[in-house]
Image (cartoon, rainbow, N blue to C red; front, side, top):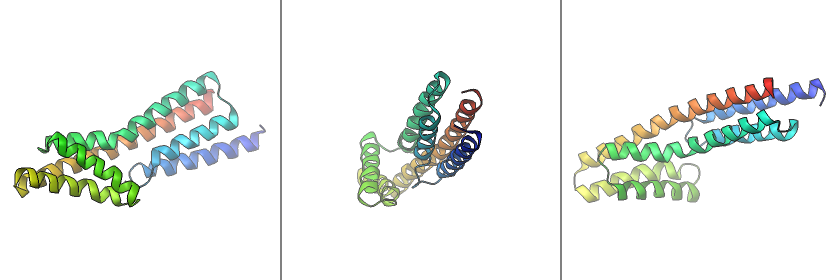
Length: 165
């Protein structure tokens, strides 16, 4: 690959990584998936050296971890807010189903609404149900921070790949 094409590729991948990084803080945008696809594309274009393979494997693990962060941290937050485990499971399921049926906002509406309704139905206390909802929201907020941090590490790993790979 000649130097001009290589530099163009690096620039395009960097733009995609920055778009993905911005997407990590947007709830309906698959930022980490965009970043993973960009690094995969880079690897396919330049080849996977030993270092590139190791770094891409780490990027893959980080992308998976970041993708799980939403559900895991929302569930932990809801539990700290007093929600029961069945409510958390049903709310997360409602979020996933809502996203599939009414993309892109269905899950953003379904999960919080489910936790509020189910906890109110379980406890017959709107304040406690609201507290569970706020706990879930705080976990969701924390997941943005986690995904953004993972995105920064992904960019760092990719630059290591570019410089050393």
